[in-house]
Picture 1: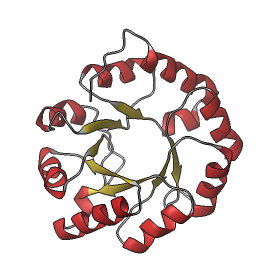
Picture 2: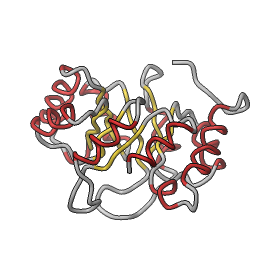
Picture 3: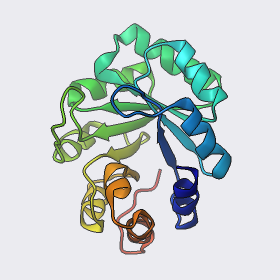
Picture 4: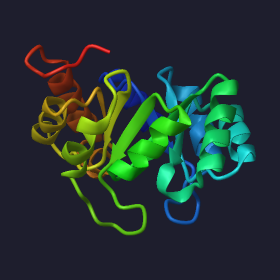
Length: 199
């Protein structure tokens, strides 16, 4: 895991995500600590965060970014967890899947929003979610497309719709050469012809 992370950083990956959720994804905080030790780029803890203790754990094990699944949290809890994340000097990534969740994320004070193409309750993939949701986001919000990227073509599609960043996980990990696919995606994202938005 640590070697793969170091290789991905070497090809230009700007953010490292590590699964720490045990039951579905067999990850651990120890995995994240090992990846943190092997890399220097910002680290996102990929887990279902519902309790402030998890945020402190994530910080202790090296996370810089903590995701909050808006669909799974009542508004008061969402706002409280966001405040806790920011009070520890980390970034809260508010993940949304429909316009109603966007409204709640903005109301909570979120400044970094991840539009997740994966359903929170199943393995369904909705690539069109980004196009449906992004017009409702304030210009000042950083927009991250999460899920559904398997090639430079999908990356360019998200960029053309206004994505400031793209999170890619499963397709890289399952690729015959994770480093080669990551290098291709990074090169596409950095190409002068790739659409970009000034934030």
